Length: 297
Image 1 (cartoon, one colour):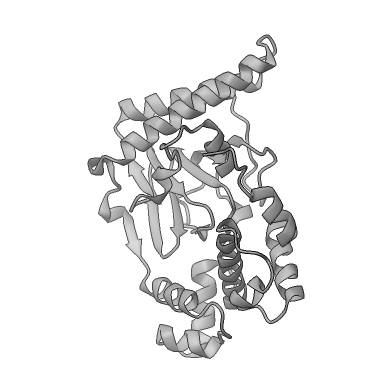
Image 2 (image 1 turned 180 degrees about the vertical axis):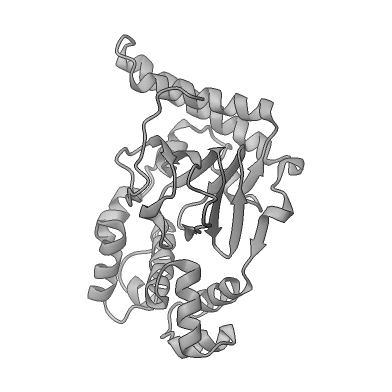
C-alpha cells in the first residue's frame, strides 16, 4: 500500500469534506488537529497501516493496531486519545464518504451504509480480505492522477470501485468472527451514563450540577475528569449533542420551525450560532444540501 497517497497533515483540524462525494487520505503521527471530541455529517473509515492508535468513539475506547479498521457513523462523537511514546509512528488511511454518494452508487434494496450501523464499529479482517479491500482503494487513488482516461470513464470507474469496496466491506462486517478483540475495547461508564442522561433531557435545561450528580463526582472534580477524557468542556459537549439531535431531525424531514427548542436551545439565534460554528453553514443551508433527491433510493 506504499503508493503515492494524498496526505493530510497531522495538525490539520479540518472536519468537513472538500469533495461532495468521497476523499481518501493518509495521515501519519499524532493527530494534534483532532484532540477534541468532534463529529461530522459524513461516514469515516480508518485503516491502521502501521503503529498503534487509540480513539474514544461514543462511550468506548478502541486500541487499534496494524490491520484494524474502524467505521465511524455520521454524527457520532469521537476523539483521539494520546498515549505517550506509542502513537508517534502511526500511519493510517482515512476514507471519507457522503451519504448522498453512497445512495447514488447503491441499488434498490441495498444499503451500502449498513456496515456503519452494525453492533461493533471495529474490525480485524484476515490479511487476504484486507488486501482485497485496499486494492479497490488503490485503484481509486490511481484515478486521481490519471490524465489519459476519459473523464466520463473515470467517473464510472470511481463509482464501480467504490461500490465494490462497500459491497465487500458489508459482506465482511456480517461475519462476527472478524469482530474486534474484546481485550482492545474499554467501555467508559461515565460517558455512557452522561450520554444517556443528556439524550433523555435534550429539550431541557441541563446543568453542570445535574451531570456531576450523574457521574457521582463533585462538580469541580467532574469538570477536570470530563475535560481530560473528552478534550472538551461540558458545555461544548452538551451543545454538540443538541446539534446532533437537530441534524437527525432535519434528516428525518422535520421543518426548522421550533426545532431549536426541541433540541434544548433557548432561541433560534443561539441554535443558529452553534450550528454554524460546527458545520460552517446555516441550518437552512444544511437542510437544503442534505435533503434527499426524490429519485434516489
